[in-house]
Length: 73
Image (cartoon, rainbow, N blue to C red; front, side, top):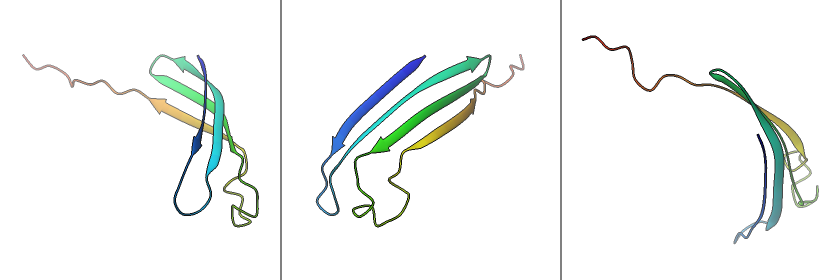
């Protein structure tokens, strides 16, 4: 499954920013892997010369646990 989102964040202190991401999720039984590229329009100056505002590839690995435990009737 693929997905994307984008938006604009208005804030009182700091800098407003646009943001977006695009990615895909692959599932195998109880495991799923989501790979997503995310970025913002903040410049290095507005980000305090850190790399926190650079685009990045983010991976999330999930394992689904059962909601109910074993039954003991």
